[in-house]
Image 1 (tube, rainbow, N blue to C red):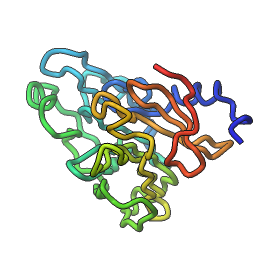
Image 2: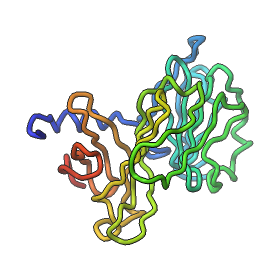
Image 3: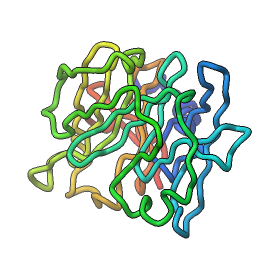
Image 4: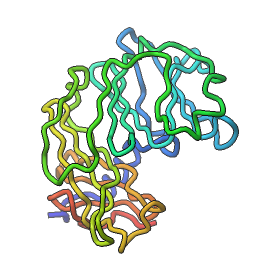
Length: 243
């Protein structure tokens, strides 16, 4: 029953759900490393050679970045004290894990000019602890995946991404629900989001999360509004708000 779901509470929760760089950079998680170092995110404006880039640096050294994110990358917390990033990578979804204490500082001049227009989503001078990809065109349903040990402390991660639609009435977007601790991904094609109903490209699902009380998935469709899904996670129950 959706009558018992508090839509005002869901809208408040959605405001805190991580969305893609750079538009949602203020939702990015606070990072505290295993050694207790605190890190801060910086958005480098909307113009110039570093336009739309979001960087991560030590709180006391904001001018010395240790990681830079390009458009569509999203950070997430990996317990107990690691940093995960997921992003679209061609026809795949890429998931990466870093130890913040191992991130080395670099000069922003190293990426000025080339990073913003490039297809690279992540820049760092340090090697990740883990790095793997999952095909984003998997059939609907649950699939086994090989998850590196460093990411297995994450229980659930919901990644919205494009989906290969054969026709205008087929789903053009899907939610990829990663159960990294279990080595599984559940593919939920969004049957309501089709080219015949929406302007695919101008409108897109930017972020989604699971309501801890009702266990329903809710989220935001950029250019359309915020939504609540039915129990199957594939169909629209109703709009929480319309743009």
